Length: 362
View 1 (tube, rainbow, N blue to C red):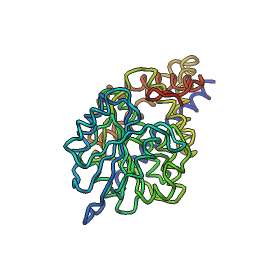
View 2: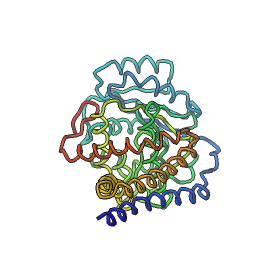
View 3: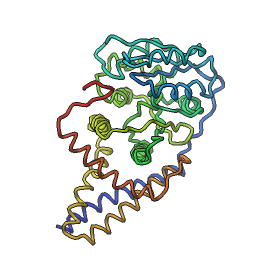
View 4: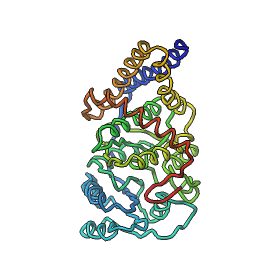
């Protein structure tokens, strides 16, 4: 039995080694340099908010500080029936910013729900050539729009940036590890998804698929839109550098974290087989290593150390690319956090509990 388990764990380790090899290969050869446009096109930032009184000032401060011509950028904010003081606070914050517009989103105008319900109503009001989508708990860098527009002008219709968690080191490493894997798949010519808190989509691609009015409802609305745009033949790209590195707020409650992961797992089941294979292999590592400890603690410990070191190297290389400091000690300790979240999320997903997000069930 220990031989079988060792072989299965070996597959997991081999997968991580392949990730490192691909990372080194593509980062040395994939250039993310594009020609700066002669004239910057107009862009629209679409921001859905609901009960974001604690976060919205931080987000809007980063958006109005973007290094982009003010006459070429508009910020459209849709308040999804907030029950706190979000709407009134936004009114105060944008009072002296004429390119910011606030709308109340009270009624459903289509089959969409949640964030997509807001975006489907904001998009028709947008006048930009490119739509940027983010979340109210995000803080974006000044270079965010320029970096993505520069890449888009070469013929890319969906561009994804990088998001980390700013106030929780374990969640931040978790995001980094997952996004780095997604980036590797993009480098291999197998793009799997975009990220709804740090993305850009061209107006032509959005309208070509009918926007969210035509896209089926999904709790992972960003992935659903991505799938339809890809199916329509538009080009996509994942940029992995600090120019598009945004920071989100951490999730404080364990139950909320599990609801977030269940929402992500719903989306993950729609991924193509290469990424699903990697995720399944990673997920089964935990029960395999636990069983291995039962049959042979010495061999299991050796495999655990090797796996953790290889995974740590991949995370370190990813962080280094972003010029983001992550200590090796935290990267190693992250393995135990990953165990807890993965096993807990798996059990929570199988429980049949509905996803609760922003106070609503889906």
